[in-house]
Length: 228
Image 1 (cartoon, one colour):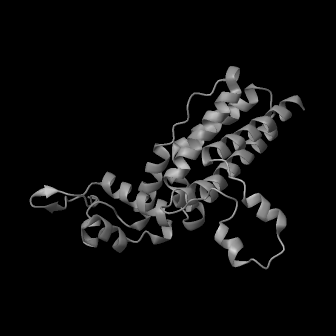
Image 2 (spheres, one colour):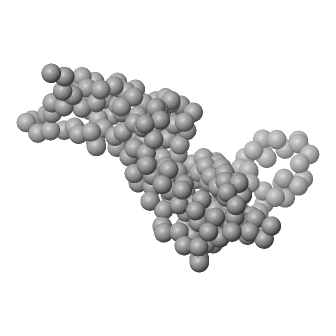
Image 3 (tube, helix red, strand yellow):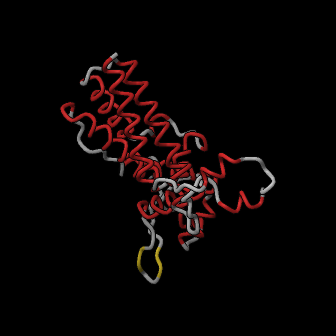
């Protein structure tokens, strides 16, 4: 008879304190803030206030913890309906769903660089949502190579935006309202950078306004591909 997975409940004062869902949520929180390399079984146990041994009552190894965390992240990605008759709004909604996912767990996005998950662990949403978006672009007149190019453009822009704009903006004490902090210019008063000094005197758009500009650029590119 094959051995059954270890799923004995860890208890504190007679009550269960761990579930696979709790482990996945904490692992994703840690990876989202510090990246998956920070996610060790010892660090996870410390964050949860349990022993490493208690974790192994619920998961087989660190690889399963990573899979659970990624699965939880992608389960939460549910773009709005995509309609060819309102394709501009649909593209914007899809982009905003990606941004919401990315900004919630910014460093977890680098999982493909930090980890090597097996193909079978790919969450269905990663395939289904991509298929829906490509189908939308084909339905509005793009051929498949053009649709793929538009998707790559959008994905790279949103990913970089989440890491470079949303990530710093979400950190306590970060007040990125100008192109560069005034202190940088003060520290380098001897540098001949008149245009940069003039530009720094101007206020930056808010992150939401910058994202709207990004989405508009993507929509314009798709509109150009349709015309071509």
